Image 1 (tube, rainbow, N blue to C red):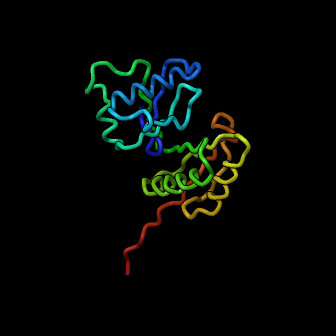
Image 2: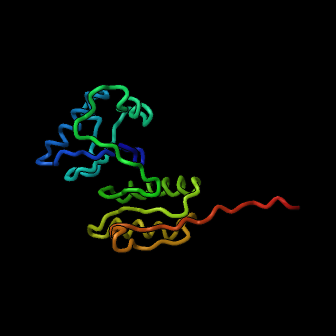
Length: 173
């Protein structure tokens, strides 16, 4: 369990067969968090075991507290912790305008955090999102360079971005 762009990321061990695992996960989260199922949206991974879930009406800190193992004796069967990758943003399956807004916020945060490079996972698809992402990167002031992912990095489904360096202001007068 971790967070990606403010959304909860989990990996389930149950096979995602005909949506039964998704339904069980949403039901569990709604029960555990005491919120309506309508406030829970699986935004990525509907057909895979790795899921990214947006939950309305609660903060990340509150989610962690409510879902932590120390606060309940029986965890969600089949949910396993996922390490957070701060050097990666997932924008797959997002509309171009939403993906570009998230990417801009992420690049600002990554730059201020002192990261040298990041990965943008946009997927292969038709190439519309990839092209929009790369167009934004080509004009972004915090981007030094970018390139398509190599084999084993995600190929054309990923763009690797080298961030500009924070300029130190000199103090000599």
